[in-house]
Image (cartoon, rainbow, N blue to C red; front, side, top):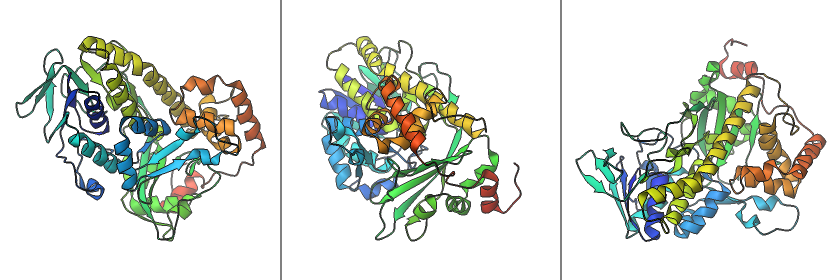
Length: 455
């Protein structure tokens, strides 16, 4: 079959590479002027106007890493050779390893390098052709190809929508969906470790993260001894938007443990300005029969709060599913139906997960009392934050928690395990719970602005 792929980001490149390796042909159309750079260092000079979050933190969750190893071991090898880092969470287990523990691994790498490796592999694949610097204007009637802004028509049996969350041509037939705002703005900054410094280790399961009761923070490793720190603030809190300023952001990080150490000159130096990201929404377009011959992948199908880092992994999961169904379904209508039947249920499940967790987080940040210590309290925060905090103390909790947050398991595996819930409650009750890792809101604002602020 002939595939025309609208969009040459991670989802589009992965789809093109996968269907080509399944024996089909693919033309990938990308609006930005991108090429297969000679080296990974060139990837950071690429201008990606079509992807506003291009420089923001990304990671391959354990499921994404597993799928990438299955689909394109050459790509993961190229990333590791170029400085990507793997983090084996199973190293935290106190007992012997079990089958499946080999998948409890995160792959840390920055988005520009991911595209570099995928694009280089796709361009080298005989069945893939990349057209860069051209915009898709509309579908050929019946989803039989793409019209481009230079008048060119790309004929195809199947069209893949990999245009992401932000933009599609007027009249593009996407499934109707009601967006739900995440309720947070992300202020991120990347750092490079100082000579002799190493990534912090501590009681946390993965990387340092925390909640101050009115805002939160998260950290992501990157490739080549880099890492990102994200300050998450409520969309409604306009005072905290001062964190978009570099100096103010650094002053705020200096009041929070352990960000004060991570951002200190002896430990690391900043390599980007503060990167704000707002206007974020959870959107599920996986319901309904779809358009025969039009396959949505990645964020075009469903996208969620970036805090959960689902985007890269689901892009690969969708590409893998597309390659699989293309081997047994030869008509556009049958292929579309089979594809949506395979990927739709999990996409809708994770969309609900994001909605519930965001709502619980926003409720807590608004000052509403919540109890995440028990399953019959605030369950979304119990099953997320409390589970992560207790996982280092129990192997079963660790496996189930990484299975849930890392997309290795369906959500029901965690949700229906009453023994697991008992363990989390018991461990949490026995832990010493320190004060929040940062000052109260008013104190933080005064520390970074010196001004009087609203309570």
